[in-house]
Length: 200
Image (cartoon, rainbow, N blue to C red; front, side, top):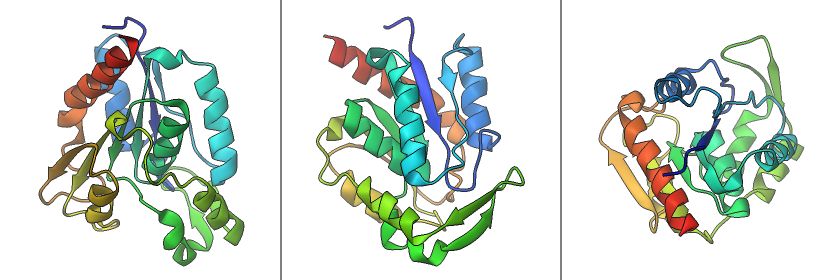
């Protein structure tokens, strides 16, 4: 097992490092002695700027011992980054092809945790589309966790796109993914298994 395992957690649209799942991930890593190896950046810019920021962050980390966790839109970003850098990723109720329905989000939106205002423009949608990765080059790198009660995204889209990946389908629940903290040991185990496999 690698001794310097790092996790990069990517939150969803209008969310923040203060979100429940992000904080549960940080707390779990603290308990595992990984307080300095859990990275939860605030994603406040448009897709292109966000990806540029995340690529620079990934370049500063040990990529041979890095795993990604992405929730909702963060799952879409994590897919792009995992495919670009051949990294393992766990996706939580991920957005799939968000550019196809993002016109309904045009305009200003308030962040759930701060006074930051996110402005969605047609350029934003074009940038999202440029990040699409389908078909997947490294499907085995992904574990995708969905709940059928997701009221925001159709979980079947994720199940279809990631049909060759490891799928965890929980009945009921919601978009926030109920019981996420109970899944963290399995998330850690998957990321570590993929890192150790690639090191052989």
